[in-house]
Length: 130
Image 1: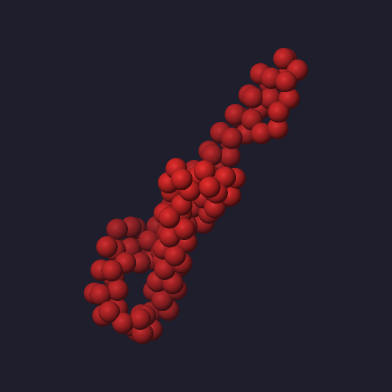
Image 2: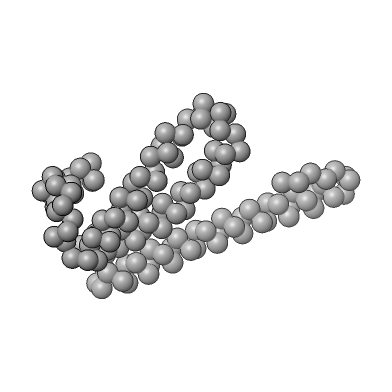
């Protein structure tokens, strides 16, 4: 809905309407479009069947969600400034710092789980690579 609304009301249902936007908004539009395009394979492969068929490739494919999140945050910061702070760069900074905090928390959680698994199994002599 968001993309359709923007295409109709901001660009006048014409792709060449992008070139009438400011350079910053043009870049933001392309960044948002890139995020949308990258989300398509994620949406199409978000079923139990796709998980089984893709195997390890499913996890690798879906790890691209972090790139999509960065692109969407940048797009939102520059196009959705009426929801954010002024100047828009402050919004970008807050969104990217939030993303960084999420990624660090995820990395720390994975590291802690791996260390716990290795510690619990080292006493039993059981070794398994994670």
